[in-house]
Every structure is written in structure tokens, then in C-alpha cells.
Length: 197
Image 1 (cartoon, rainbow, N blue to C red):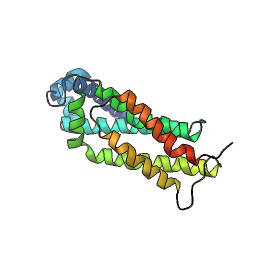
Image 2 (cartoon, rainbow, N blue to C red):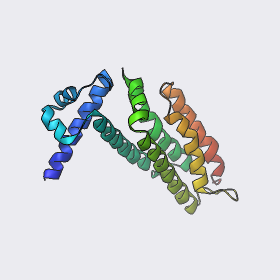
Image 3 (cartoon, rainbow, N blue to C red):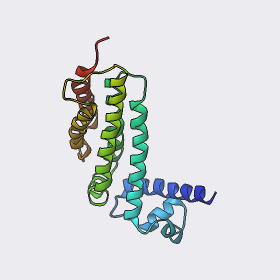
Image 4 (cartoon, rainbow, N blue to C red):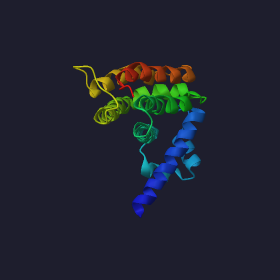
């Protein structure tokens, strides 16, 4: 029971902190601002987190975990593999980036990520590649796709992750155009592998 209460409290803090960071930026936000937004005292906030950098990292990690859930849902749907990959890339890159980019201080939050959570972003790329490779292995097992000799599903996953890593690091762009570009990437890389019905 206590663990659930702690998780609920941390979740409330992280939700409040994210809103405050988006509104005021990371640098201008204080621990008092976060405590006020979460409806708790500063001492109670310090019982959960040492400082706002810890809050940022915990919030970023939670966002990645939620995003990973969306990626897995996309990759395990009943759609053709090319559409599953396109949906997964949108969930992985476009959805989280668009929300932050549209905020008044989104640009600053992207910069802070490079300083405070670059390692988490790198781990995320590895996880995305693992998820894609698993989806490609399943699609090959089901006869949905076939690879040229010397190419594996892991190779295809690595190629896609290398391509989207550039998008992952963008701070400013037209996210609608980027969404279309990622769909084209899926078409270009995955469609040729699909077996003709």
C-alpha cells in the first residue's frame, strides 16, 4: 500500500513538474514551483527528489517508458508490417517531440535533455532497435517479409534506428513534414521486403 502511495505521489510530482518545465523552462523553474504545482510542501518534495535535475531525469525516463509502450502496441497490431513500423516511428519520435516543441520553453527542454539525460536517450535508441528487430523476426517467421541474402531483421532495425537518430536529436523542425518523412522511410526500407500476396 505504501509503495502505491509513493508511486502516486511521484507520479503527481512528475506530471506537475513537466507542466511547469513546459511553461516556465527548466532554468527558471524552482523546487518551490514544482511543489506548489504538485500541491505538496517543499520538504515533502525533497523526500522524493534531491533536486530538479533528478525530477527531470525521472520524468524523461517515465516518458520513454510510456513511449515504449506505444511503440510495442504499434508493432504488435494486425496492420501490415510497413504500417506497423511507420506507426511505431511516429509514436517513438513525432508524438513526444511535437508536444515539447510546441511549448513556450520546449527548445530549452531539448537542450537540457542533452545535458541531463543523453544516456537515457541513447538507451532508448537501443531499445527501439530491439523492438523493431523483434517485430521483423516475427514478420519473417509469419512469412510476411523475406530478406535478401546476408541481411537480417536486426540489420534492417539498425538501419532504421540510424536514420531516425537524426530526427531524435532535432530541436526545431516541421513535425508534420517529419511524420511524413518517417512514413516514407518505412515504405522505402520495409515495403521491398514484403512478400507479394
